[in-house]
View 1 (cartoon, rainbow, N blue to C red):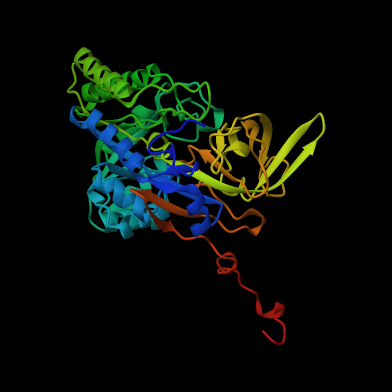
View 2: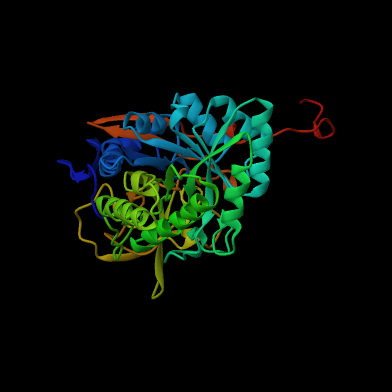
Length: 439
């Protein structure tokens, strides 16, 4: 596992993050435990802000990667905008005090109640995904006598080289209005015809965990071609061009993502050059990083519960978490790296496979990890777990979800409480006919 951010080995020989000994964190907060390196998270925010803001562009943090009240506060303090994809994410942003003037509301099937909440809150932009949604937003905005500012999500027909489940720019996608078949043009005309909708710009998102920059430039050109067409036909000027997120990060050996600065350079240069070539005003550029901000800043800490060796086959090391706190290996075959937090400097002489405690054969966190031979009670640290781990966590087998701590300058602060067994049944209801006499 690569040491990133504030990670180091301390004088006790233990892994330290944010000035906090991970052995102490396990003793104080228990395991499994999500650890967020605040300084590293903020540094990633600042890298985006610095790379894009100097060009008059904006970085919009993708809340779906990781969103809590505290994360909202940090994103706000670092000057980034925020995108949300559900009523729950929007509610989190509202309760955190995040400025609605910097919130973008996504989602391919927003409900009427969610849209009403967003209108009442004063959300900055609605990103529209279907003709039905255009009709719904127009009707609801009319009811409350508001003009909703809109971006149209387009599907440019680009197939980025990434896992099929996180590839979203191709024509056959549940997201957006397709460009090649004329649907995007029809969507532009539809919004422009509505009295309670104001079309501010165009949006696309071509996928996630992308290591090539060319697809981002290609997407920008395709969206600007739609903007030029709308200008020629309707006199509409595209104010904003949102190219989504998707920049890849280093999870394991072989991952070689481009830098944030390189992404900014490619996107800004392409938009400016293409706008000049198309003789249209260069729109404000937006990007929506999520994984590349939260992912590297997160580490998950586990306790080893058993070590089982099958001679001439494999050694399984079972930890006290698994697919409930990190479903990505089971969903996507995602690859992670790890170290023993209480023995990080020992020679890695063993090849073991890290198994979770959930009742599924597919509950494997890491296959063939190189580690010192683990022992019962050791602490296993899995790196780069800040994105889509807590966000996708579940209660399969009725295991409570882990706590999350924010570490910085030797201080560890709880930002998500560990769920209790009582939390698991909080919403359960027993109908009267099933109640026993003594209930």
